[in-house]
Length: 394
Image 1 (tube, helix red, strand yellow):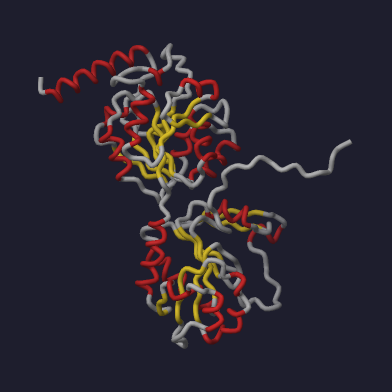
Image 2 (tube, helix red, strand yellow; image 1 turned 180 degrees about the vertical axis):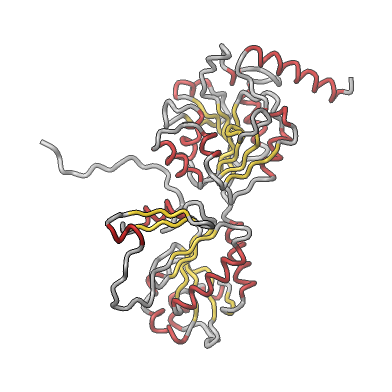
């Protein structure tokens, strides 16, 4: 007999999405035309620095029959068209927040027509023409962050004041004050830049080396702790990535994250970190980089582009992105999962097949040299000793 009782699934940390993405604002209180015009003015300015999205509904169709475009008219459920300057998708499938979050996950911000869709934050426009309409939407005003006055209004409506006890603490601008409105959104985006955590990859089996590379002593302590200490000067929290059986070997005082995506190598380590803290950026560093120093790590952090999916170095060996010295932003989490669902577990492939990646040239290319074999180790020792001699002036 199968029990019909519902069994609750395991709780995991959920990303801080709204209906569309992490930073989203529903604009309401005026006509759809005004909302669309305002959104266009904001996006036109902000799109030079940030990735922006917009969500709305089709208008002014009345009762007329709406013709399906392209192949949808012939029975297809999805159509993709590669235009000269843009790409276009058409769907007949009804959207919901689960779909919207996939489509908009790479956005820095999404503006939403609040007359048709909700969002986790709101912008109210005080417009006499839509006063009654706004009064009917008070339940949707759960997190109002900005009030705008239309040309026909000089005062916030009394019912808005009653619904928002702290309305006087909110910024209030005229609807045509685009400079201050854009500055408001830019500041909100800057405030929402994800905290940066560090992750030292130490869960590999080091088969080619013949011994655990994370325990190699290049600088007076085991390499995994040396790298964790360097990241500690940059990151909010630092963790050592390890397999479950390695937990007991981690020295007290160092945090760790065990692999919850098993058998996927570094790819699984990155996913395991995001599973623990999906709203953090993760500074990923492999433990087989004995020449990597604080100046190189700081260079990547100072040039971090939080609007990218990731910020990484270009490998001096093959000019491809170096995935194991990379800052992965939270927006990369669904992308990594998507590649995994298609059977790919190579983080470099993810970086190579996404246009929204910032790739830098390392100030000291030799710092990116990794060590996989005993021969590599001998070369690294020689280079470390030579560097020490130069620094001592000998």
